Image 1 (cartoon, rainbow, N blue to C red):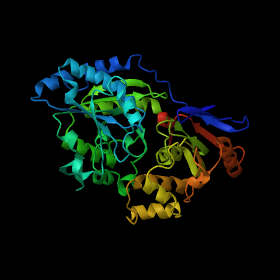
Image 2 (image 1 turned 90 degrees about the vertical axis):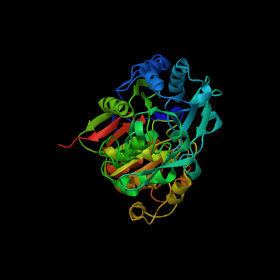
Image 3 (image 1 turned 135 degrees about the vertical axis):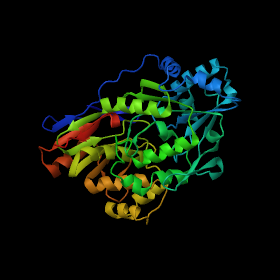
Image 4 (image 1 turned 180 degrees about the vertical axis):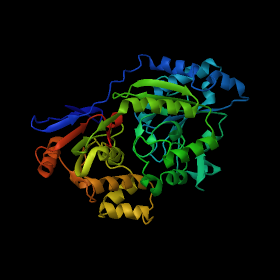
Amino acid sequence: MKFDYGKDELEINLESSWNVTVFKPEEQPAIPNPVEAVRIAIKNPIESKSLKKILESKENINQICIVVSDATRPVPSHLILEGLVEELNEYGIDDNQIMVLIATGLHRPSREEELEKILGEKLKNRLKTVDHVATDQGSMKFLGLAADNTPIFINKHYCESDFKILTGYVEPHFFFGFAGGRKSIIPGIAGAVTIQANHSAENIAHKTSRFGFYKRNPMHKHAMEAMELVGADFIINVCINVKHQISVVAAGNPIKVHETLVRFQKRFLFKEITAPFDIVVCGNGGYPLDLNLYQAVKSMAIGEMAVKEGGTIISVNECSEGVGQEKFKELLFSGMNPKEIYDKILNKEIIVPDQWEIQVLARVLMKAEIYVISKLKEKEIGNIGLKYAESVEEAIKLGLQKHGMDAKILILPNGPQVLPILKIS
């Protein structure tokens, strides 16, 4: 069978004697003309005046800021931008009035080839483009305190623009519940201190900080506060299928658009299981979501949803860019056991940027063993408990040695495009 892996696919040879269940996502056909679909959605917004009418109601529009996802996300931003800029040009907005702000959060800056991918052939040399740099305090504006007394810093370019448009895609997220909407603000264009407050150890540990949880999720609530403070005039969000093609477009009111697409996702993506599995094979859905081991933790959290206590998770991600964030790598090689790491993070003995990724990894490792299938060498996966195997087949056989030849195996070949939910009787 084929498994999403890097820019291609990985072929997995399953033996007929294995007790295998495969969950494939429901088919979501691609929209035939996505650029036109974006323009139609803009003209037919959800619970909002049309973009044209909102712009007409504003005075002295010198700069429009459009927030787009960075290259670690599989959303085809160039198609959204093409439709949006065509509309803006028709409304009398010139290219020199438009700034594209890339929502990097705490990720690395965009590379030249990635900028071309984000902007597309038609727009790459037409629009001013800026990478958000969360650690550059001088490029932030302080907007006040959230309800939990944490400071809200947001990118100055966005704050000081005359008109603000968010773009992105909606899919389940391993601790934010769902991506999209307010996530363009935090972590997308927020200052490091604000991101770290939102992604605090306490928030990550909260029982609703999981795939599919939404309105009771503390990070969602915090990001909504920030969006209310800074404002967003209009939003265009999409859903994508397994080939990362646009399947749905919605535009208009930032809150209502996101809620609409979350409801759409819930109809398609969650599949009930009646009992946990002994072995779960899972990935992030291929490139660009499986660029490094840091990002691969998301797939391990998918495995956590379906695996039994003491079970085996097989994480299948190419990791063509290695391990990822430096502090994550340091803790990966700290020699501590997962519980020690987890407790020290909660007790604030470990306070580092991106602590949330190692916190989730430690939590999953406390439940199950994890085999890593990737381009990484064994010496590169750290010493806190991750296990190495040359292939998925080898890892399955090691799991069968542990759990018995009749062990139940679940394979999730398309990342978070389908998520197992344990049915509680």
